[in-house]
Image 1: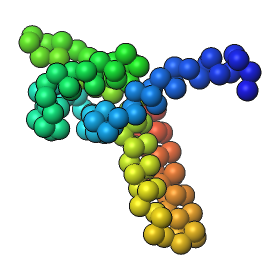
Image 2: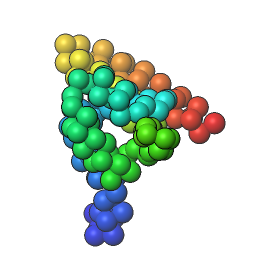
Image 3: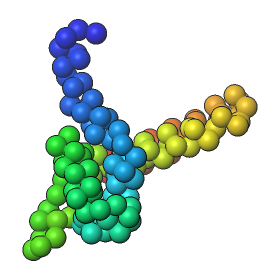
Length: 124
């Protein structure tokens, strides 16, 4: 790959880097199709407000989430609506180790089709 190609992928690399923590993956998966305020995320994770705020700052800096301040509350939503699907597919893939190679192939084909259908629906 040329340097121009790798530079073009740098913003996506930042997205994947930002998702590289279990709490941030949890946040991204729970923002699927909705927006949540910090207090919702604190209640959902059981982590301290300051820790959730730091995780959100990492996600915001990588442009994974956007925020909207309303009064005293800040609401977050995903900039990449496909991220929860990606998380779901990767988690499901981990469960496939008990399946035969043929069963794995069929299951992945089915999930790939579901992802395509979901993305087409988002494209609308």
